[in-house]
Amino acid sequence: MIFSQTVIASTSNFIFLDTNIYLHYEDFDRIDWLRLLDVTAATIVIPPVTIRELNKQKDTSPKTRVKNRAASTLRKLFNWFEAGSTAVLSEGVDVLLEDRDPLIDFEQLQLSRQIQDDHLIASALMCQLERTGIVTIVTSDLGLTLVAKANRLRIKTKKLDDSYKLPFEPDHDQLRIKELEQELREIKLTQPTLLLTFEDGSQHKKVKLLPATKATEIDIASKIGVIKQRYPKRNIASDTPAHGATIPGAGFDLSRLAMGLDVIDRADITAYNDQLNDFYDSYAEYLKRKTNFDEINALAISLGIWIQNEGNAPADDIDIFMHFPDGFTLMGEDQFPSEPEPPRPPSKPKSVAEKLRSPFPFATIPDLSNLTRLRQGIGAPPNVTRPQIKRSKSYDVEVHVGRLKHNLRERFDDIYLIFPSAEAGKSFHIDYQILAANLPHAKTGTLHVIVECDTPTQS
Image (tube, rainbow, N blue to C red; front, side):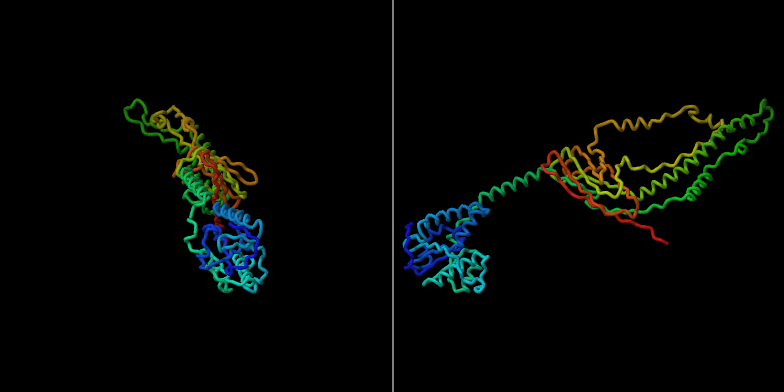
């Protein structure tokens, strides 16, 4: 490189290079511009827009290679022009640093000040107006619009041959990003994928509220009347057997003996009738409780929620947090009222003969139900805990799952919600968050419950 402070005057060919030439092609100071343009002398002009673009790529380009190329080009230009605005690149080729932005009318020439290529065209046009000679803009393979605008303004253009273009080399940062993305994909393939669903596997559930028909006192009295007809009281007089005939030649009256065996004790009949009175009262109370249960049950929704693992690895030590809105009463399966059982009618009183025919007339069969329940409660802790419901202005529910294998699912205990009335029923959603010991981040999602109400028609 030969430095000179003399003003270039002998040349008649001025070259403006598209910024991409500096970034993606061979170093511009190594290209044989005289042979390429078939001229004997030429001046490469560096306008202000080129310096700005190179600085921008140096500071903001996401590609390391482009940043480094822009920086090295700027250092080279700084060394050349540190002592002046002109330099000799090689025999017959000079370089000129143009420090002036063009003052031409961009709008009149249908150019935009916001487009960098238009600034390059404007600088070339200013050179063409001020100097005698041929002005040529050398473009890259991306400069189609630039070529069209330059040709419209009668500025010569030439596309630099692809043989000068640098071979593609993956950027180091891009390669690292691809490696990390691949590692992330592989990690995801070895992790569980957890979500909550309803029984059918979807995250939407449609339910319908049906208003219950509440039984009136008249309805209850009518049903009690039917029960009294089915289980009538015993009449002491009618339950006493008639005297039979005496068997001839017998030393005693066999008929009287048989009659004694068939007799029902008056005390047993009285006790039975008293038990029937209690049974009638208990049945009336049962009907009231059944009415209340039916009313609650009609306004209740049972949410069968499942946790599902769609990943390729088991999930361990899983905590599920669900948030329910307000507007209803939320309770667990163990808190929801059971349907009342009708009372059992008392056993009919037995005669002496019936008592004697019983295989265990005086034995009492022990109640083993408590032992059964005790045996059911012994064993390993459940894999899925019962939902823990916490009441605030709304509801927060927590469930813990010990382990869930991939491609399997587990069901929670039923969660019930009860609306105050059918008219108060409205759709809502449940936001949830899932944490697991072998998941780096929490999994979040939403379940949607669509509530439809059937209101009774007014007659």
